[in-house]
Length: 431
Image (cartoon, rainbow, N blue to C red; front, side, top):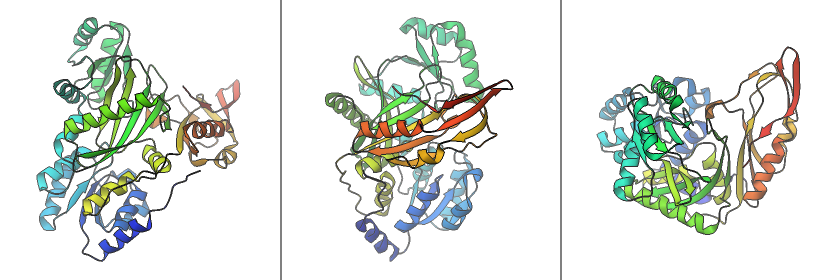
């Protein structure tokens, strides 16, 4: 069983040689503690702009210069430019969705090492991405950026129900609406506009088929596909992701087609540096890209890549920005799986089996932050999920079995109302 491995001697050797030189200066938008540690180990002087609520005491000790500014705020660009004028930065990076745009803008404006702006713009805006795919001759689906509910209904009548209506620049399964007819078009449109007032929603023909994500790393426009990962969701109405299994258990020829369409897409948008995360549905006409991001995947998928293939996608990017050799050779794959918990709504009266879950064979990481007395509500987007279990195995099937088996050891006593208390296993949603 492969577990998370420490950086190699070669990596530490590169770090030491870099530390013996003058530190290069890195401006980073967003981040987290373990990543800050890695950046300092490499040898960068680190400046970070991060949401105030996401900064820990340990982060303050690690980071050389800290700006408490929201990742997506335009002020981040101006602050970076002002600091650059005093003491130039060598590179800028972000590995978080709310920071990738500002990082690309900073790199473009200051002329320093960064992922170029155009691929970030294309992938952040689903309408622009769909238009690009159509122009480039890549497999796509009917879509329309809609200005009102009437346009939603007109689009659906043209392509046929059901359709998906979602924010143009949304994330985290937020406001994903599947519409079977026009009766809820006005409500869905209004809810999206309330949270995303500066952009219009996008309507797309609903696609049927298994869902996967694709993890890749790129440097100087050369792309290396690392992993295809099977995805589980709650399905309609919210389509919240509840599990990932790596590597994909789809037929080899299907995986090959998925890898091919992903590489073609990355080439077409001009993605140059760093990790990417592409979401795909396999339809009866073949794999079609739903979304793509010029960053690593969330939901611990980057950790799953390291556990399964021995590749650290962040290390790859950082070494490249330093000018060091960042070629990687994936190891023969093992398996990794993450499963998210789904608890019935109510008040938690008792929690049984949590430590047994943590000690289960193959379990690498557990996230369960509820305690007795907490209230549980049903989740409708990814940030509301109830926790997860990440496990490894000799292959994808064993990893999935271990994650799901571990979750079944957790029992939570829930008081649904004053007169009803239920003891139930935490539910794991599987395909």
